[in-house]
Image (cartoon, rainbow over the protein chains, first blue to last red):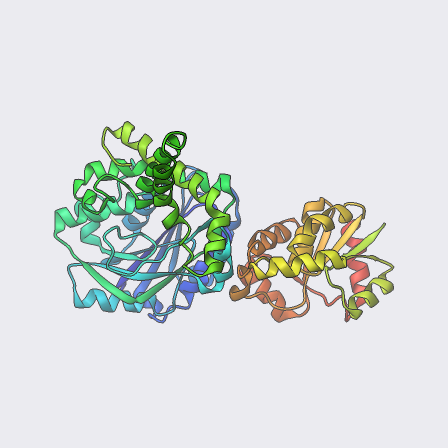
Length: 323
Length: 155
């Protein structure tokens, strides 16, 4: 009998998907108790080959569902995946993740203790890729459960939860807020809490980006105001009640300070320092950390500005206020 | 046909192989090695600074034979046909362990005409972790087979 179905949405990461399959093959939970459904929309054949030839497919554990190339959004792919799955518990992870061998067993154990709740595991930047974190622009995830947003890199919903709300909202086209939206809807409809599973560890890829690529990735946050408008309770966690991140209001204060530079130098410097004080300490207070943060400052400030602009644009589009 | 063995830091075995195959070596100069020491401390892939220089040098040859991921990245960027050889088994712990390495690995493996592995275990690891079949061939142990492979790839 299948106890848990793993659902993965994959898009143009064939090599990382291959590595994910290997990590799942090494799960300590017997293969008779779980299945894997991968939904992918790659243009090339690399992912299809990896999925077809993998030992998990030969053993009947893995099913792959291919969508028209480029038509899959994370929400659509995950919905396709869980609807095809057979387990009463549906565990989501991403194609840039590497679950530890005890991941599924630990999710199941935590889920058995709190059978009505959503189970959330721990996510850590992959220690195999620690050196990449020295790059100035890095994307990874570090999540200690319970976290309200329930990112899909490491979470398990009851199938009944997903059926109760119809799964992910496919109107959200990017991996930005669709996980939080699902979590809030499930909470509202089913009254489910979060069962933390700190022993269910997933390691998230550490990927560095050039400035332009990171700006494109950051622009996806324009969809967040849709989510906060739909779930106003999320604004309780907003910085100063209206900001997506503290860096955004600090950047606005610093920008105001720069505008005042020709009139009141002292006040101008003080306002700019509101931003700098935090931006220059992101790597700690030691001289090497401050030096590194100083070198990264132009890029960091520019990306904070891009993110602020993205969220502001989303607010305009959805007629709400989040900055 | 002009053949070059591409390796940032060729050892005596590599120089011997180059002599035996009448091939040239595309290697890193001392200045780049110093720069590489600096970039390595910031987590970058070894010999990453050498890659663009090597890419230009590689473009002068008819066939390339790369012996490392930076060499493979340089060969791939040159647009010339090349063989990529693995002497040791790739493993998950190492494949994305340095800045820039994964991009080099992917470009090298995708662009190589032929991938070789020193033995069957290495070939199995190449297929498992990189998804490409590798021919078992040890260029240092069997230079004649290596020369035959070069003729095959360039024909």
